[in-house]
Length: 338
Image (tube, rainbow, N blue to C red):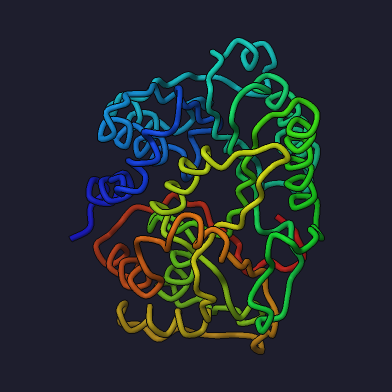
């Protein structure tokens, strides 16, 4: 039986590799934009790793505090929670200086019609953060959407492929990267650019989106035939361990699972567990947003949970009445409109 407590416990149990790396990370860690989908469990994971490593660094979580459940999870696990709107420059510059920063702040959905807000959050704010924390090691969350759509046969974009962002959201994500690259090249700030392509938490993610359509009897488009995803516990571990790989010029790395997963096959497998036949629409496409994470696999090792296991867990979560965050990924979007 899946419960919220069980899921959170699994997401925040540090591996030995993380514990070993935590011993090498000098100083406290501040997570900016910690109230989102990944931030709360990332903060608790870091705290648990520090305890296990015997280092007892402070873990700061900075967010607007709009999600009381996330805030309570962090507070009850010993996280130093700071309520602040990062776009308020006075509050940003009043934050304590720390040796390590994980930058997760960003805006995606609701961009269409409010592009100025997305650009403010994704491109203007990073310039101020990079200035405030120019002497810190910074892991910067970015997106695989900055790459072009590529043929399935390509194996996905690597870090050597040139970004070709489609739509204003993806453009603003690239602008975020450039702001931190400026700091790395001008101030010597050590930066780790973390290009994520779909974390799976069971309460949200690409597998949740597919399973939810199956449960509701809604058709699943095959225009985007494949996707990448990674267990959120592993994704969060890479973000923390990435602090040791921050460099000047910036280190850039794709983060996702090693598999390129067929949406149709994933839906069929989910349908078997859920006891419902998936409905498909549109002809099967031949290209998609796909990332090659071979460098991350070599650097950090393979994810703790396989794609096949995540598919089963996702179905079990829904059958057990698991909660949703109500934040669809829109993984099937191909024109950059969010």
